[in-house]
Image (cartoon, rainbow, N blue to C red; front, side, top):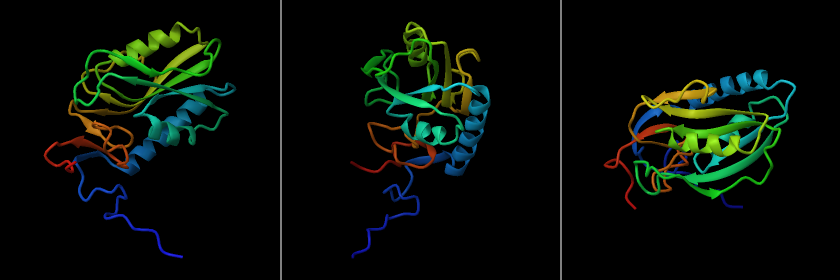
Length: 194
């Protein structure tokens, strides 16, 4: 039996060097996710929350988060787009995949990768509230400095990040870098060539 190929670097992401300055280390991400899971477990005690992950960016965060929630949970996913292949939001939110389950009477926790302008979050909140959930809260891994919506809109927040474009841990630039185990500030000059 032959040995599996080994990655070129210790991060295991296939990149010989990071495509920018590391902002949040992998261990810091995991420590904060443990805290969020503990908080969500306490807040939803006696209930079975439905976690709605916003694809594609939130998939890694949601995967780690649900393992830190000590309750029965259900999952569903939505896919939306407001960036395309740009580092700036287009200002237009498109639903690429809608939910498969009925939200009526459910305790819904919307799981977002990053809240930037707040446009996508506002759109999703209105859309989901129109489906009559018993409750709707938001858990965002990252919130961009200066763009934080009200505390009523964001119940759980992982980290606040500077206004630079960030990638890694599920977040991408043109579908690349989602597999980084940390969050970094994207530097186009440091990015791997196509």
